[in-house]
Image (tube, rainbow, N blue to C red):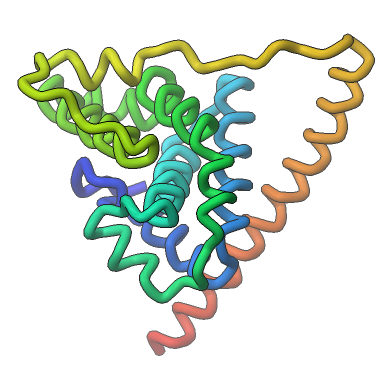
Length: 199
């Protein structure tokens, strides 16, 4: 993936995801966030999936009326989404941003670019988290504050009985694989359509 800046849509994966979002609607945001969290739990959160998931969190913030100017530009032509559906994704969105900041290939790439650029990217993620939750940024916060906020452990909910967990994991794995397959097919189809329109 090509990264051009610290903002959510400063990369090709996020821009392509926004095109798919305008076609498919808000359900794509939830499935993208879930896939990224699953990949994080399996220690395989790639830069591309992380960038798409950040765009999905932007869709949550946009639906809640707290979208960035870039989100306004990318999502203004999308079908209206239900704010209650976005509210239901706030906890997962926070978990995702924490996961991306501390343990993703994208975070490693930003760290390789340099400490100053990595800090600016972390600050952009912290701003997104504030917009999703509706929190106001702390005034005169120290430089480490955004990173500290995102470094909070990813929330894990209490687990039910072992048999129920095994059954739920199997069901979710099948569903996620189906969603991942559908998402990849939809992205490929959209890319083909865009290429045909450019000709």
